[in-house]
Image 1: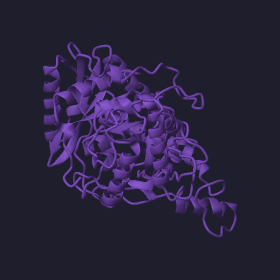
Image 2 (image 1 turned 90 degrees about the vertical axis):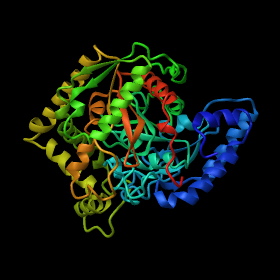
Image 3 (image 1 turned 45 degrees about the vertical axis):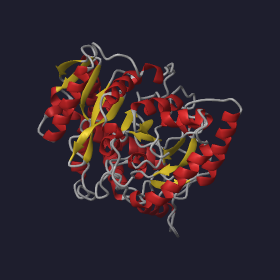
Length: 483
């Protein structure tokens, strides 16, 4: 049963081939057996899962139906879950049990999903490798000596290893799409505001966005359907109708205009990945797409702008973790200042401290205009480049990452090298655009992804293109050895 996709599970439950309870027990046993190799989960929620599975079976017996009714998933451990530890991969929140459910968690629970647990992640979602977690690094099931990508590496590794069919994730600068590329999954970052951020512990509020990680575009469509929608609790949520994403999967690609930015194929791109991108382009051309070279001239400025804006917002968001109200508190503080300093110094890891300091510096008096304000101006230029490009093409295609997954620890001493791995994904977050990564082949036995970007609220178009591509290729069906 562990090889079934969400869509296959929905059909199996509808046809009474198995119950949600049977499926849940099988997957929990598989997690117990295999996850020690991967470290993809922080918390397992067996009791909750079995209760939800029994309830889902009862709802089906009563005549209810739905693609997510009885489907097992997991949540990235920054989505608040009532009464369950929500750690954000940190020592700071190791003892925090959320008093409420995040909107995403509540919506998916109402749709009938079964929560198997909370997945491992980079501390406060800061990282591209899932090595900064307080609970240890996550391993890539394709090669246990390599990273799975971050910050949603736990969700990605668990789905890739067939521990469960799909999981929630978040994307601030590529944290859904990059792990999807590294683990041979399909991952979708929706338009900013499409999925509620209420109850999602913030890293950088103007960039964070929740989305689905699954093996296929069809499964991403199913999970996004349950996650998307307006939320009055979230001031950044957009009151825009949610289309039926599954209904648009089978549309023809005839005449679809695909833009390929020339800036994507510079010196930093592994030539083997460039070849796989070209192969994907040829496959889409066979399906009727029209390819056009375009330019995104301000792409070169995206990484420095991002690494001013995101740390600045992080320094503000993480100021609430002070050892007073909730979270980690140092022992025997001498006074209030000592409480603040030691609680934060002991509770935050090195990467989080680095980004807080960078962000605080960029926002400080005398430097705000030189750094933060200038970065926001670059952000507008990046958005303008995309708006101009989408006047000429329907979607944009390129590599998801410049390199395949690197070895664990290989970039720990050089954080800048790790930051550069986000060069193709960051721009979508700066502009608020939807982006999707889909499997496109392998380099040295490690998966490689191709990224698709679309205009605002065109997630359906991305899913349509990816689904048609997956009907004509089999990269997404490959399974890591041993799983």
